[in-house]
Image 1 (cartoon, helix red, strand yellow):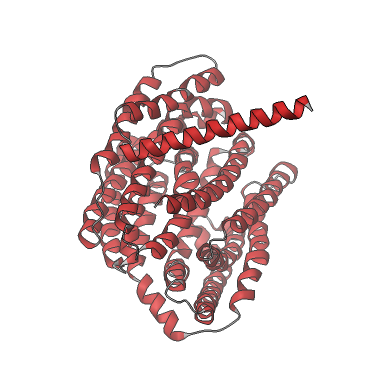
Image 2 (cartoon, helix red, strand yellow):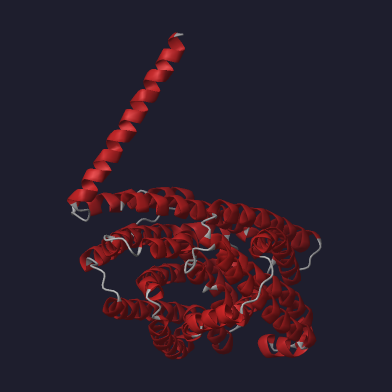
Length: 499
C-alpha cells in the first residue's frame, strides 16, 4: 500500500506543481487584469468562458471522459490504439459541427448570452477555441492513461507562458480588452494541439471502430445528466446573478470564486489526474478497499488544510493584489473553498462507481444536487446577492457529498473511518475563527502571522490522535531517515572542507 501511496504522491505532486506554477502566474496578473478590465468586462469574460464549457460538456462526457476506462479494458496495444483513435475522430467531427454553428449564428448567440449582437466576433473566436479544446481533451486523457504527467505539465506551462504573454500585449499594448484575452487563449490552444494532438495521433493513427464508440457512448451517456447537474452546481449562480443584479456583480463574484476554485485546481484536479487510472490498476489487489479508505482520509486532511490556509489569508491577499472595485470578493472565498472540499470528496466517493460501471447512480446524485442548487440560487441570490450564491454553492455541494457517500457505500463498500473524515473539518473551523481575530494594518504581516496557524492545526491533529499508530510509526521512520540524511550530508561537507 505504501508503494501505491508513493506513486500517487509522485504524479499528484507533478500535476500539483504544474498547477501551482500556472495559478501563481495567473494570480500575479490579477492586479493587471483588475486595472485594465472593468468589473463589467470581467463579468462578460466569465459568462463567455462558462458558455464555452457548457457547450463542450456533452461531447466531452461521451467521447473524452470514458477513454481512460476503456483504455485499461485492453492489454493489447492495437486495441488501445483503436480506442484512442475512435475517440479522437468522434471529438473532432462533433466539435467541428458545433464550431461551424458558432461561426454562422454568432450574432444570435451573442444576443442570447450578452443581450446584444455586437459581440459576435467574441463568439467566433471562442468557437475556434472550442474545436481545439475538444481535440485536446481526448489527447489529455490518453496521456493520463499513459501516466505521462511530466509531459502534460510541461506542455501546459509552455502554453501558459505564451497565453499570458499575449494577454499582456493584447490588453495593455493593443488595448483589445476582452477580445485580447480570447485571442491569446485561441493561440494557446493551437500550441497545445500542435504538440499533444500530434503526439496522440502518432500513437493512435486513424481507425474508427463503431462498436467501441457505441460502448463509450453507453458508458458516458448516464454522466450527461450528472455533468449538466455539475455545471448547474458550479456555474449557474453567475447567470442568476446577472439576472437579479448586474454583470459587474458577476465580475466581482467571479474573482472571489477564482480564489475559492484554487483548491480544485491545485489539489483536487492533480489528484484525480492519477487516482482513477491507479484505482483501476489496483482494484484486484486484496488490500484495495483498505487502500481506498486510507487514501481518502489523507486526501480529506490535505483538502481541509488547503481550505484553512486559503480562508485565513484571503482578505489580506485581495487587499494587496486586487483593485478597489473588487475588494468585496474576499467574503465569498471561504464558502466556495469549503464547497470544493465537498466536491473533492464527492469525486473521491464516486470513483468506485466508475470502477464498477455504475454510472447511473452518479447521474442520480448529480441531478438531485443540480435541482437543489437551482432552487437555492433562486431563493438566496434574489435576496442576498453574491453571498447568497456562495451559500447556495456550499449547501448544494455538501448535500451531494453526503448523498454520494451513502450511494457508493451500497455499491462498493469501503471501510471509511467517518470520524477521521469529519474531525479535520471541525478542527479547521475552530482555527479559522481564531485566525479571524487577527487584524493588522499591514496585510503582509497579517498573512505571515495567519500562516502560522496552519502548522498549528496539523500539530493539533497529531496531538489529538488523528493519526493511528501505523501512521505515527511511518512518520517517525521518515523523520529518522531525514535526520540521517542531514547528518550524512554534514559529515560529507565537513570532510570536503578538511581536504
